[in-house]
Image (cartoon, rainbow, N blue to C red; front, side, top):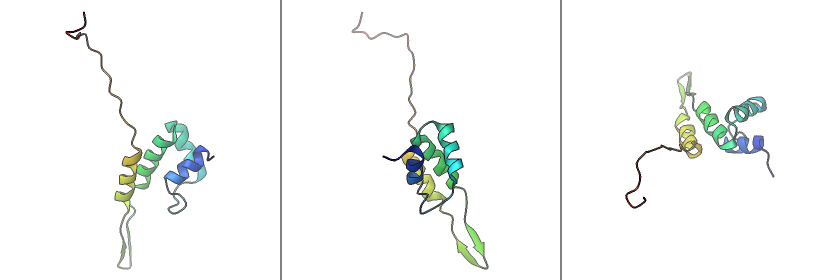
Length: 91
């Protein structure tokens, strides 16, 4: 069974696209308390504009890929509200 760091590395595709040292992955987990939320913020961080141009050769940014992947791990917002209204069929 994989631990949280290994799951986070898998989700962030660290083998193919290394970006974070283990110490930063641990910080992501400490800040966000669960692997899914840490993955979301890790993808956002990887989405920085990293395109480069050297001697006329352009390597485009892959930020759109990381933003799309981040959407899959985006935390769901739970909306709750209180109302003083009562249902008509409940008395």
